[in-house]
Length: 219
Image (cartoon, rainbow, N blue to C red; front, side, top):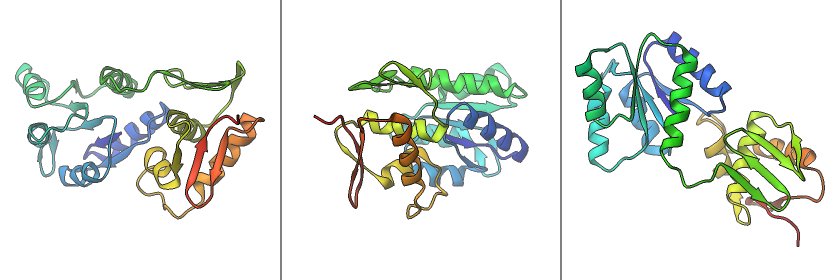
């Protein structure tokens, strides 16, 4: 997800809270930065403060909505009048939360907004004897609950959603890490190695030499 908030303390606190809830978060402090992120990444949702150093974000969202942009948006702002709230929805917002508010409330609203977006992926993904519950963030193999780190779960979730097809390292970095990650680093291989150890035999994650990985049960 993308967070656009110019007040540094709030931005840092929200990133910590949202990452703890399982989100990979990119953060910007102004509309121009958000625009750069949105032009190069596909997000599940965006949280915008309204009054940013380079303008009111509802104008930016309204323009992108006219261009067909459909990513869910939550406005998080101190502007609390009925007129302000109505303007937020009229300009393309999907939710509107007034500051100050508990960070946990923002996280819950973001999670609900993503669910309402109606992404095609089902909440429980299965392949062979592996089951990944995306809503509960639980993984089971042959009915046994496995303990995975946040990053391990994110990689496995993406692999099982693409089961039977080859997923490149670059694609995994794009979906499971933030934009500061070096695509030439070996972070993906390290996480996949740990996943293989935890998933045990028979092996489900296969290396496609020079390309990436494929999750597939051996026939």
